[in-house]
Amino acid sequence: MNLRALLLLSALLPALPLSAQTEDAPPPQCAESLKTPLPAEATIIPAPSAWPECDSYKSYSGIGRKVDYSAAGHCAWRERLAQDAGLEPRYTVSSVFGGSAMLTVLYANGEGVKRDISLALRFACESGGAPAEIKYRMKSLLALQSASPAPDSKFDFCQDITSGFMMGFCAAYSSEIAEQKRTSAIDALTSGWPVGHRTAFARVLAAVKVYAEAHGRGEIDLSGTARAMSQIDAEDSLLDDFRAAIESFEKGDLPRAGHDDAGEADRRLNEVYRNTLADADKHKSDYGAVQPEGIRTAERAWLRYRDAFIYFARVHYPSVASDAWLALLARDRISVIDGSFCDMDAVEGPCAEAGDTWKPSPLP
Image (cartoon, rainbow, N blue to C red; front, side, top):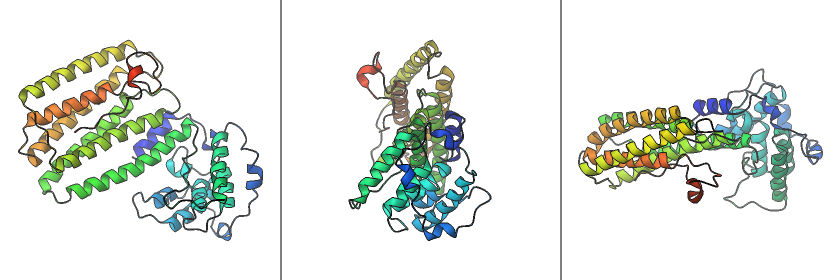
């Protein structure tokens, strides 16, 4: 995700400087924590003249590189100085989770540095955020002072979020990690395929990413401050389903359907699509409403994805008739459309009984 997700966040979040996400002063307990002396390494990092491009969060999480806590820490100190100088870019994962936020995590978990909860508390206060988030974050850190964390339990900067602002950024961060895992899994799965098969699949992969973006952008209720999270989660859900489907197909779980099945699925899809468009047009002036053009854009993207998949399937799964794939893909598109338009908090109408049904359903 990355650049596209960051553009999404900058478009959906209010145009305020990053420091303006706090509406009130930090909690009173920060006054003492901010007096905690800094370690020696804080004095030997040269002040940057621009925001450093080292991306501490990527070194910490192994995004596009190996996990390296020491590199994350060195980068975080530089980012912190840049934050102090007002050099951080607005609304990027790097600036939100870098600098003081990354140092909070490193010192809380003792990763690349000696564990020091007092320093972690200082950096948690420096990081800012909604007052409630700072309060809960400090409470979580204080709980670590008198207990040894379990080996599989680490302090996470997103564990105490309360604001829609941070929900969006936490979703963006998680999405980058999820994309890396998807890419690694697919690369491992396809590395032994013939060149022609990989070339055809690359077209499918490009098409499904465009479709996922169009789905998240145009077919999800984007009302409320957590709309960025909703869009990112919807895209990731669809892409995760795609990866799971390919893994299932490679294990031999292939579709079996005939011409009549494909025809019925196509008829049903057209019916659902028309009804959905009509309903969207009827409610297009509602707050956060899905717009008809967003549905049309996603449908066109899905058609390109479907056609790319059918071509790939003929190359890679020659024993399976195209009708079987057409039926499967049409049914999956129906499940996406049917599950996309219920508000997560719906209390009346057809969504009430279904509850949270806005995420797509798996392909197989």
